[in-house]
Length: 167
Image (cartoon, rainbow, N blue to C red; front, side, top):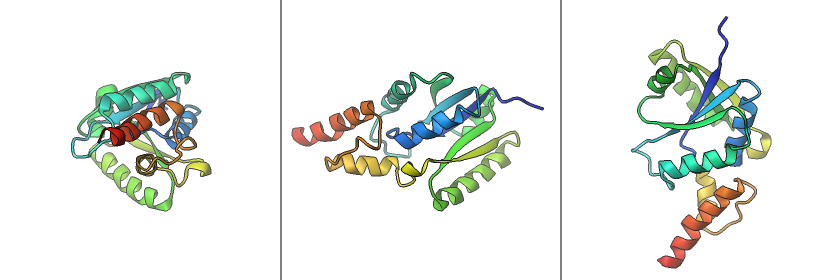
């Protein structure tokens, strides 16, 4: 029987939301360490730089014991092999998430038979919540305080409110 010492929670986290924090917190009940692996996908247009996303995640998880925030580029299965951790944690909000995540889990497993994916269903308070929705609300100066931690609210206001004034 293998004991898992760390699980990987991969994602773009652009920006990190309360839904992400919910998954991280709950994953810590299952695993002694969670490695939050922020992807540096150059094909995706991010609102925040890789450094900014890592910084925000470090701030919102600083009181959680057992969380490590890193980044990776390339295939997630290669990153998992490099750090010798083969359990992936993925959050599910709706059935549509499951269809996509199920397909990705099967591909990851095909690429590396050691990979296991654990799906955590997000708290019902966050089933509608996505980083894209949060960014859209912030762009239009809507109230995002219920959706993201305070440091993320501040960063989104700097990004969208100040940039509107400058333009």
